[in-house]
Image (tube, rainbow, N blue to C red):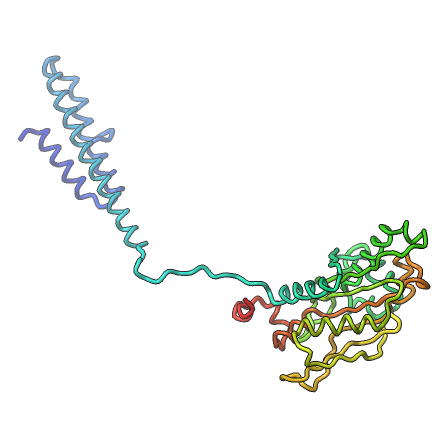
Length: 345
């Protein structure tokens, strides 16, 4: 065995002993690097006669090719070993049961809101939506709320810049909807003809400075409005009783209208309900405020209160959802606990 064969055998042995790519590169440098043994042999060719140089050069090139072949083979072997290791670490047992992707569901408040919209939609009510940051006119003044009313105080209302507020109810949408409705049909009103009735509900988020088991700084309301030339308290009672029976899917309940006061209605009434069976049997629960729309509010809509009359109501969607689903703490709706929310899928 000549010196070149010994060098090839030595290089192959060191490559085979390299356990990592870094070890392999260090071994390569000892043979093919700038100061490697093969490189030094190539430099020594300059001292040889021409004929011997050709023969020796061909032998050294053959050696170099052999070393590079051994090097590449070891590189591939190390890469294959690393891939095998990774595949074993990420191996899947295909005999195990498959993992199903969980399906989501609507939030209970969303479910309640959609149900409310569907019920009132079946009675001919439009659904109105609008800004949650309101100006003073739509949130208070247009609804006949006096300047010194407690609802305007800082401890009840979230105020933002330039006199705007986070709306304390969705009643502003009643005014916005009514004003646009009147503008659209002004030609009929001015001609003394009958204007199409205003029949709308306004569900959405509202905000007040309040927080406990039955109150939240952010909550949901649905306001209803029906204005025409001959709308009475009787219509209010008929519509709301029908709504409650459909929402709770039962006629086994009592509903009473209790005299009250609101600046935007006159006369006004609180609406209470009592189930005829179940855990809430025999217990009156307040579910809504209501009343005939105040004449000043009718004027603020751009209508003549001597000709147009109507009713309005406002109900807490969260409270209705609590009663429908048997939830005793309002905060559960907003804590984001999947153990609670998954029950409503």
